[in-house]
Image: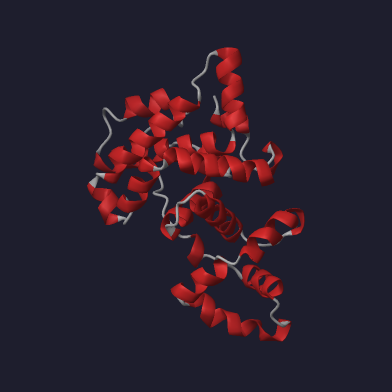
Length: 235
């Protein structure tokens, strides 16, 4: 089971740099001047906060060749700032989470030693009882991540299932996600991976983060925009 970390800002591609240059008005033969700016963390972060990048991604999303890391980071950073969550590391983590979970094979909860993936929250919670230290940490983080992903991108699906079929409502996902991030933040491995402050923020600001993603989803996502089949996440 992979530990998600805030790595989006160090995984940009040549296409991402070309996109930034085109939006910010740089001449094609002067793109190389952007490279040192984007390798300097402070200047890079200021460039990525330019609202022109956000607006252009929204307007031209069907014709883009940018990387998922760049795409999600710019969009998530913008909506989280609007929600009052200014920490770039948190935005980077959430963007990496969306990048990972948008692919079916990476959204699955696969525990070492078990043949089948854990598809239900109750299975993941039950697995915590016998999990070793590392697996227990990963499970807590995964439950928090999955709760945020589903409640952030598919709130209408959750409401529909809750109203028509008696499945858990949004408050269940919020409480489960908040608790899981809080417990994970206190784990020694959260300190090792520099994730404790991020998990603390996501626990304390889970509802704000979730509603910010709801706003983002309403602007840019349809179910078909995400590669992972939705039914596999709600099984």
